[in-house]
Length: 201
Image 1 (cartoon, rainbow, N blue to C red):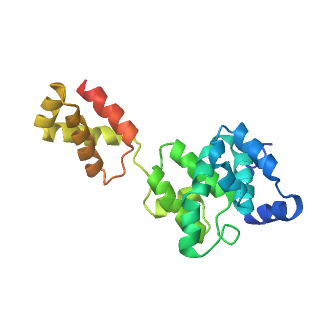
Image 2: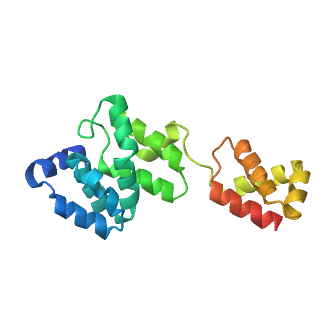
Image 3: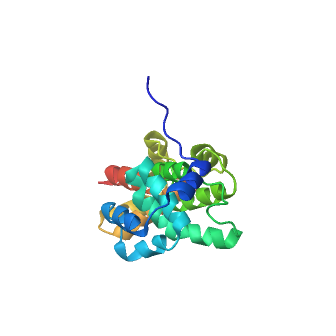
């Protein structure tokens, strides 16, 4: 039978911290192997708790190494400072961080909304997809639905369409902006660009 997916919990991270630890040189090698900026490695090395967290996240999904690294040395620090809750005391676990990064890669969550989601998960543990749905953070990535909105925007903005076809690239941006507005900011920007361009060219 298929084994259930590995989920790394806060308790497992604490056991790793207490019993095994992670030497700075080991971490530097892992960061280098993941192709991440060596110049920023020391920010993680100097924070053993965050380093262990990153190590576990990467063990779950190596493709999320950069997402986890960037968040841990950036927005995570701001959240910790704002809430007064450190990473050990937070409700977030490596599995939730990884899943959030995967949602971004899948086009279901924008980078900015990923930060909102992680700030929420920091305070209260939950399945990232469920929490993102509850917070209304998910992007619209349904091609058919976006196509309907784009068709309406094209129909109601003939001058912008004519300007774009005449070589005014700014007009394209204006049309994208109208689509984003029509979707309440939830449209998947790369997908909107792709569909709109295919309809106008």
